[in-house]
Image (cartoon, rainbow, N blue to C red):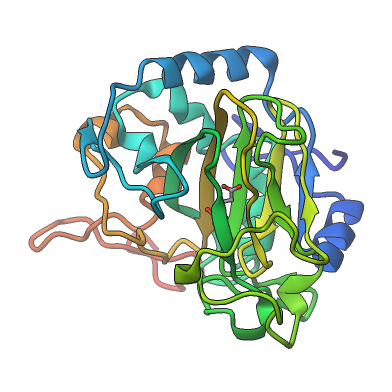
Length: 296
Ligand SMILES: O=C(O)CCC(=O)C(=O)O
């Protein structure tokens, strides 16, 4: 990446997307940041995975809950960032992708610019598992839509899928139909999500192979899913979904005081961009474009 600039605090170098990133993302709806995590970060996150307790669907680990999307997807730990293990904190504002989140799904240049993670999931997929085909630009919700207007990206959601292990043939790579974020017709060969169609042989879908530490970034409006894992062992992928700062957690998960208290202000702002304004508070919220200042 070029165009490295400093975050507003001056603390974290944030990688801004290059003009090639912008072109690729607009054209295909996704791009891969190779080597997004260092080897040490990958090792630390795999160690954190090894600390996960045995959980049945619905059981909790700290303030994170196992909630599998379907019976076929396998282990999916939602509200991951609040599971109690600080190893995951580094992901929140990781410089390898937070600049992309701000640019593509961060309401850039408006009075509500910024970003929020509205879903964070640790996934483990074993042999036979898959994530069914879904999405597509033909009927995208506002939450997941692709948008580009007046020189600005206006996407509803940027997914960041981070590989913690190499993902090659048979490992269940994510598959995407390039350009499908702009499709006008639904794919003729798939049913609805509940039918559980597999990505594997879907015409025009391409597997995204990855090395451990690579991050796949895509607008959720792309037609996508996780192909069948046929190899033994585990596919380990973390999914973060970034949206505008006014987003809400999809399944209503909350954040503990313990988590919010230990985070840096920059990270806290990404998990809770708009703190609750409690009755009786002496704090007066101001927004970026407000002309009124209490001290002016
Ligand atoms: O597991 C995968 O590879 C894809 C996950 C996915 O499609 C999703 O979470 O929306």
